Length: 103
Image (cartoon, rainbow, N blue to C red):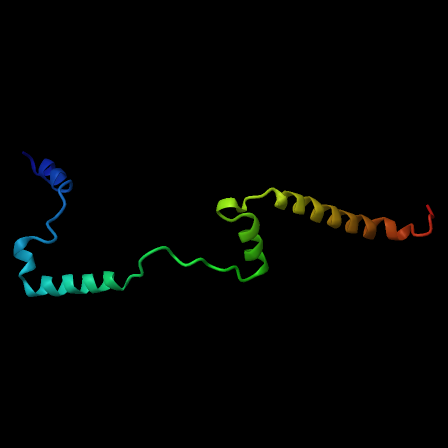
């Protein structure tokens, strides 16, 4: 078997991390102790629910959130905001010059 073929097969086989000869060695035992202490400190269970802090986060949690919070209300909100914005532009560009029905 060529070197390339042996190298290809060796990457498929995982290395022996906890081999019997490696467990008895002092440096490996200390490394495994650090690893177990690290994983012991990681919190278990589901992550705590994050409360929205600002207006945008509240709006996102209310209408775009997970579960039953999906809604078509943001589409209606966008239409209303565009109507108000359009009317204010139209008023400033046209209506305020024709207050007394002058044309």
